[in-house]
Image (cartoon, rainbow, N blue to C red; front, side, top):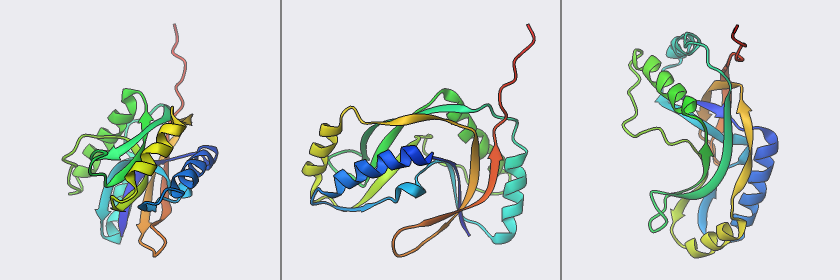
Length: 190
């Protein structure tokens, strides 16, 4: 079973992102565009794990120390690895250090189950599309410049989830397996 841990993007922000993708689709480019309803902030990609290991993963994620809700702003756009040889077009994620700390805690907790640590540093983003060929890059850049500043909205993440990723002809389909709510911050006695 192909799995990952992620934070879901609210529907109203996905709707704004859909409008941006619709504008970008008008460019004569060879990009496989993401479905906005499937957008998420990946905290950890687990890859293929045996079905019997899913319960262990759930228990590990439930055992994480309580996490306070995290404020997230989706702003900016760019290309991985760069705009000269792009493979991915992305939207940026602005968040406090707690988001990176959560990703590190998820990573560390799952390492005990034999799930390898990621070699790259955590770089939160939303993948808008993947290039099949670099043709049509200039029109895409032009459309993004017209949209500047690219600002899709802010939200407070109140949970993260474990997902299954099923490969399909129209792009991956994501199924939520388990939810892990954050705990609201409680006022401290003065």
